[in-house]
Each structure stands twice: as structure tokens, then as C-alpha cells.
Length: 165
Image 1 (tube, helix red, strand yellow):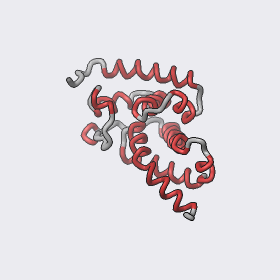
Image 2 (cartoon, helix red, strand yellow):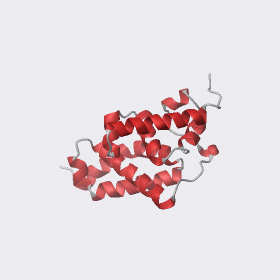
Image 3 (cartoon, one colour):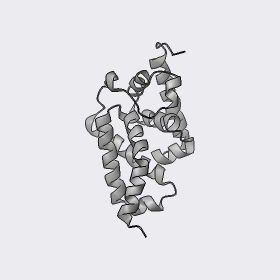
Image 4 (cartoon, one colour):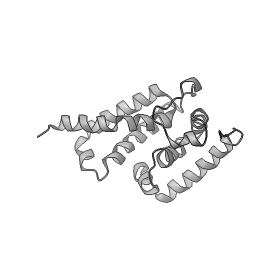
């Protein structure tokens, strides 16, 4: 039988890439994303029994990540400006078919934290409205309204960009 520490190591190893991608999409900075994920792992280890008992462990840990992102946002009042020379997401995603990664990330970084989180979770992480609401601890209606506002804002930011053919 494996120890709780070994179980946690396996769990964290299986979630690391996804959490790093989500954190990067939320903040636009790899170093800050690493810090957010590291703090997420600290918190999830600290509350490992709760994570194990959760109906959806992935959603539980993503909620911790969103909390860490929000804490950083409140504490420091925003995020660093994205360096477009370093905007290379290692994991391919559907956004490549719509606009360039750099344009998408720049547009995402203009959104308020809550709207950015809904877009990242819904469209870049592929979560349903219900799953997103559970992670963000809000109603599905709030997810819908935040998503609609975010998409309108993104459309305004990306409207003047030429889309790749």
C-alpha cells in the first residue's frame, strides 16, 4: 500500500502540466505561473485529505489555483505586462486556429481577473458552465454573464487584428 506522500506525489505529477498551463493563461507570466502552481501544490498537500475526499479532485485543485491567482491580484493590483517574445504555450490549444497566441494572451490580460478565469476555464480548459461555476464558487448564471462580458471585451480587443487563414 502506498503512503499518503506517495499518493500526493503521483497526483501532483499528473496535474502539474495542466495547472501550469492554466496559471500561465491566467497571468501571462511563466515565473508568476510557477509561483502560483507551487503555492497551489503547497495548499493541496496541506489539505490532502480534503482533496482526496472531493467529488472532483481536479476541480478542487483548480479552485485552489484560482484562489491563489485572486490573492495575487488583490495583493499586487494587477499583473505584469506580457512579453510577446516569450509567449509560447508548450501545449497546443484550439486558440491557434482563431488568433495567434500572443494576440490572445495580450487580449486576455486586459480582462478583469474573474472574467479572465471564466474564459480560461470554459474555453481553454474545456470545462462546462457547471464545472466552471463549481471551481469559481459561483452560480452558473454568474459564469454565463462573466463569460459574455469577457467575450465582448475580447472581441473588441481582437477586432482590429487580422485573423490567420
